[in-house]
Length: 432
Image 1 (cartoon, rainbow, N blue to C red):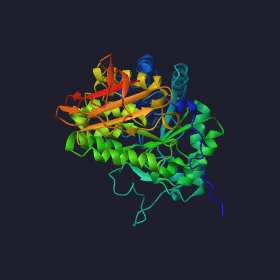
Image 2 (cartoon, rainbow, N blue to C red; image 1 turned 90 degrees about the vertical axis):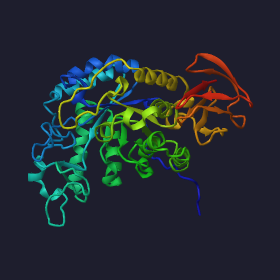
Image 3 (cartoon, helix red, strand yellow; image 1 turned 30 degrees about the horizontal axis):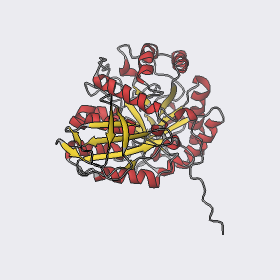
Image 4 (cartoon, rainbow, N blue to C red; image 1 turned 180 degrees about the vertical axis):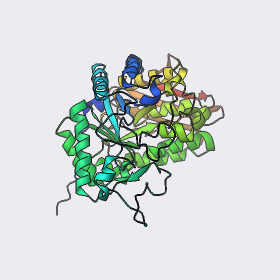
């Protein structure tokens, strides 16, 4: 019998992903005007920040029946082939994508196909395409309070063909570069695999699943959410969760997920910001250390719009609530870290970067330390994930040698007897 190993991931991720950083844009709140045209004024700033992929929250008209708030949720889609007039028209969106491409950005569109608005025309035209509850009525997604939407039933091949056609439409008509797919795990994998193969015949696309499952990487999605990473970092910084939980995540990530399976490491997104709190609420004094790990550790970092400006508030989800833009040291930190990430191949994403290797230390309950290295460079990272000042030594030879201290702009030699003084929630990056 043949026991030759088979490559798990059967899709080809575009090479422009190799050192990319993703940025989420909420068009409604991004500018005072809340339009595609107004958002373009931020392109030079985003380019300077170092982001590459712009994830645009849903752009479709929003349902009016059972709407939440005065403007409703963009995840309640009334028409998959139309543009929300709140943001502009189709020509404005096409112009937005064209201008973004001119800056070197890639555009992925937030796609919501687990459910639709109650007044989507499909409800009248194809009521059989929708799921039913035990009473035989249309039903929102079970157990959630999403009563402004009703679920589809993906056992219908005609529904699958319709949704796939709508996805192809936006790639063909607007030249977008892929999709971020809402609650992707609620939809059968074989649907996603078929759609991915169809989209790739038009152009190489990038697909992000709002889910955390290895299976989605096999033949459909390039990247999935690192929800558990986010939850662990929140637990460490706010609730005293032990650092060993990070070991569990990174072990799982390395042993279960193929190297080609990209994971999105994030501190905030539209859901976290609206319902759980700002980055400051979610990570408190450990915020900057968590940012460092999200960018320099394995995974593609996400920046939620406004994080770089200090994310001063929870954005209203169903109303107009523009971001308060201002210079902020968090933005400066992200910019510096992203530049470092792009400058060293060891820090690149997925199959293009190096694995993290644990460096044991003398304060394992407080300090998380690791190296990422390849033939051209070595990056040694030390994070004090506690509210105590720590003197720490390191074990083994992996981290020994001469380095440039990234934040202190000086040369440092790490020896077997070197003892580093780490401030509470302090962090250091050493570059060789």
